[in-house]
Image 1 (cartoon, rainbow, N blue to C red):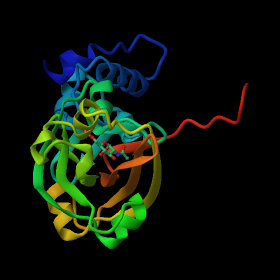
Image 2: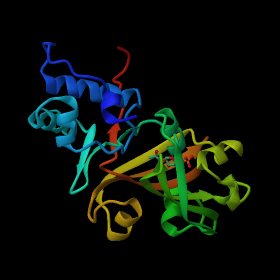
Image 3: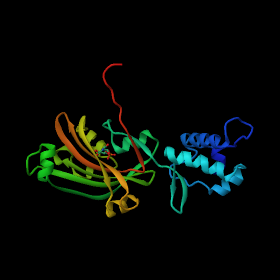
Image 4: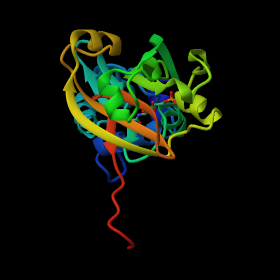
Amino acid sequence: MSFVEAIGPLDAQRPAPLYQQLQHAVREAIDRQALRPDEALPPERDLALDLSVSRITIRKAFDGLVAEGLLTRRQGAGTFVAARVEKNFSKLTSFSEDMAARGRKASSSWLSRSQGTVTPEEALTLGLSPGTGVYRFNRIRYADGLPMALEYSTVPAACLPSLDSVEASLYRALSDNGHRPNRALQRLRAVLFDAEQAQLLGTADSAAGLLIERRAFHNGQAVEVTKSYYRGDAYDFVAELNDGPV
Ligand code: 16G
């Protein structure tokens, strides 16, 4: 479906200004998934012709949608539907579940997976004795094939039957083995990606991101410590705050 088909016709007879009609139509098309994340929009001059409006109208509409975070402009490449995801960082959900909840297809590629023993730092963070066996799972996480995050997880070996038991989802493997986390502590920090991280995530060097370190427990027993590096341009971070009964 073309962009013009996805948004439908504008109507100069309606009282709402054309740029607002266009913004409304684009928002709706994104909601209906008639426009998909990361889809390229046609050049502004083509659109102006196709929609019979001025380029200024197109520019004004898109400027507003870029400011809202619904569209993004890439130097030299044009305007795209933003691939942003709302991430609720007060929920104990997994990457796979977060994506499924938004109709996005989660996938991963392995950077490495290995077996070893806890580092002194991990032993402290997870409350494990020195020498405890762990599995390490390092992955690039994708939504609809677009890189969203880098995740470095350490899991006590006692929580999983083998290194291979994690396929698409770590939490699925932990659940299957009776160790799904039910409590976690999270630490959030703003970061700038280094050259390697930027390359893995397909961002510019020194692009901004958010690091969330999650230490998760099942009935008091440590089951993971994961460092997740999220792309700042791909996420909105939200939390539900509740100050008692309302
Ligand atoms: C989320 C978790 C991460 C967990 C991963 C499992 C946060 C901040 N982090 O990214 O700790 O290891 O999900 O995802 O939410 P998976 O089950 O899809 O492998």
